[in-house]
Image (cartoon, rainbow, N blue to C red):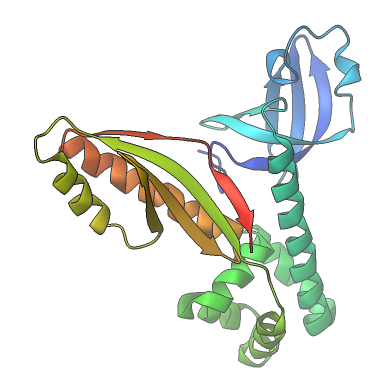
Length: 244
């Protein structure tokens, strides 16, 4: 499996070449990926170069990961996906600038080390919110410099983002309502709001979009496993985002 990538992720890439009905691109992280023509745009494509050509920068969605193979889609990237991705890129550049201002000439090598495992944004967000993350930062740049970095980060004002996903939980068991209530009581990481019979909203607020997304995904995995054990049916709708 390709490191640090998951199906559904939004990635920035550069078109490398077009061969037959395949477009080969290079991700920012260096890996090569492929987009079949049917995933470039809906409907019939008369001239592929109206959409992509070598050296063009595009934003895509990860469709499948199989071994070292990465399949992408351009047409499935929504305007919301593009905006969220660009927002994350802004945060990434901002956090890189903080490291450069504090660490000076040594910042580039530090950033390279971080990028081998994670994004700078996620690495520093973890340093802000957990002792383990703080320890990792101290081990990388030293305690004194880590303190300076965290002071700057903690003084920044960031908007909270609320991610929401609607779910439907149903069961044919006679005590179904009680079973569903007991199942939902086990969920601690996200807020759950009742809408109507069998329908609920899962909501997670955070200044870290990806963390909120991970918490929602993990919650759905847990709910799915538990619902299956209890002979319940779980369905989900499209995730929504709201800014605070």
